[in-house]
Image (cartoon, rainbow, N blue to C red; front, side, top):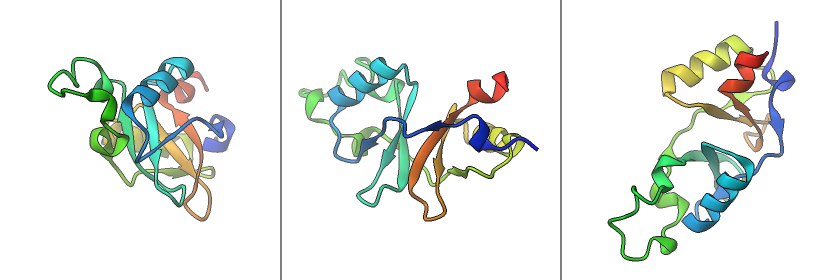
Length: 123
């Protein structure tokens, strides 16, 4: 059975609850991310920021959008997978949560990678 470990990206970029929107947008553009994991101080995934949630259109109501942090724009989620998760189960989790990527965590629950839906389809 194929596992997440076979297709995941190890040590991907992420943001913290305090990361400002301009920095998130820069990283998303640089690494071509549609979604980026948000981790807490313990390096545990707590949510995801989508490109849509930090777009200029989504932020037009704010006077100073550069002061907005990830915590204000993220979709809180406790969904993550481990390296041992089957690709089939991973895809089911993505689809049921309407996500195009999932954080991968180690046995302690710390962020260690990401798996994208496109990776699953290529495999």
